[in-house]
Amino acid sequence: MKTRSRAFTLIELLTVIAIIGILAAILIPTVGKVREQAKRSRCMSNVRQLSLALINGANSAKGQYFPSNLGGTWAWDIANSISTELVNTAGREVLFCPSSNMLDNYSIETLYDYEGRKFTVSSYIILVTGTQQVAAQYLSSRFQDSYPVTIGPTTVSLAPSRRPLVVDAVISNGNDFANVTGGLANNVSNHMDSSRKFPAGAHTGYVDGHVKWRAFKQVTLATMSDPDVFTMKTANTPNFWF
Image (cartoon, rainbow, N blue to C red):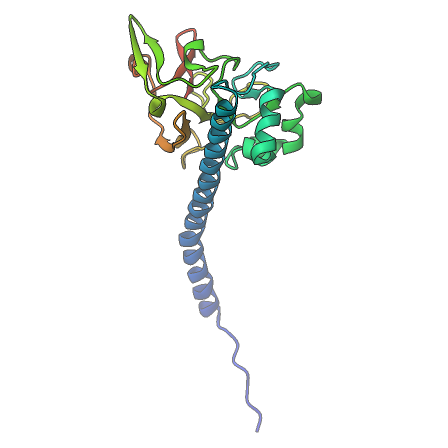
């Protein structure tokens, strides 16, 4: 006796497709968040390794940070003298945030040996003397117990636990964080929020060695007086936050 195979009806197929669509709608955002969280964890590890490499280098050189003979133009251009020492300590990938879209457009080799090894274009800003576009009072040539920062008529003293040493690149071109020219096409802040219009936040490595994630808050001219918000501005327009 032959048995007849039963095919799926159109309604059953549509039901299965609808269920798959619902599951995909639930899972895809979750997977994206998990992936971004993993990138942030790697980024935090990079910032910690860079901070410790700079601190250990200073300890070995009587408090002096790696020499910074910069040849670049932008804040994220790192002198060969620094990048070589950091790579020898922690590896080449440590200079690049996994969330940065620079890695979508350029290889690590290209960024590390930028324009024939003139300098390294990193995803991070290292706040040592010689870094371009950052006010001198936010840069350090050597390790200190305290760091003076002048805000308007007042000079405050920051302890190492509040003095940034390595930071994520959070950049803006007239408050446009999603497409910033700066030597590289389509350069943006390392960590963008779900709208892809504003930074979600940034990692900051401090002189005392600790690292923390700080959620981004829109900085205005009125809030630049906070000594914990290190800002570079051009023509009264905030350009960098970290």
